[in-house]
Length: 214
Image (cartoon, rainbow, N blue to C red; front, side):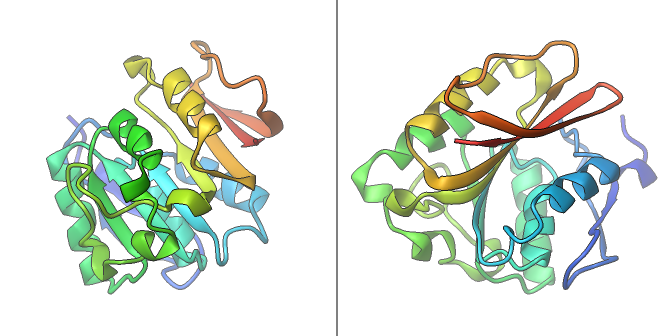
């Protein structure tokens, strides 16, 4: 069980710089501060105005950092009720606009992206200020046919979902010039689409992280 202090994260830069938040005692493995800082250094010039997808959102740290740095919208997809409730409460408290929290399994959400009724454009992603977005995959939270500019893809290491999720994203959901951040176990690395081009990579302890272009 994580201690109280271990469940506290900090926003690194942007309008919420220095703000801290707690995430619930759930099955959550947040991206370490040092790795987040490296990632957003890689993404300089690409976050402001971007439409983002934080898949397997967990604590929401990556999507929150993107919002702080001026992202146009962020869709948080997470299936754990405690994490979803915590994210919605935080977004309300911080008066965050252009954020949607979707309670759904990642694979189901990605499959729904290809359905015509989900292709609502960027307005759908930004449609609920304060994170009061769709639940259970019932609409809301899709960037649809426009695609996402930036995707954070960080499934639980032992879930085995990374290859399927990456393949689904490669089929639909990405803009041509998108960037995809992937985080996985440094030793147990999994297959990713051969069409993706690795731009940067790094390692921190047991974490291997990558930045790809489609």
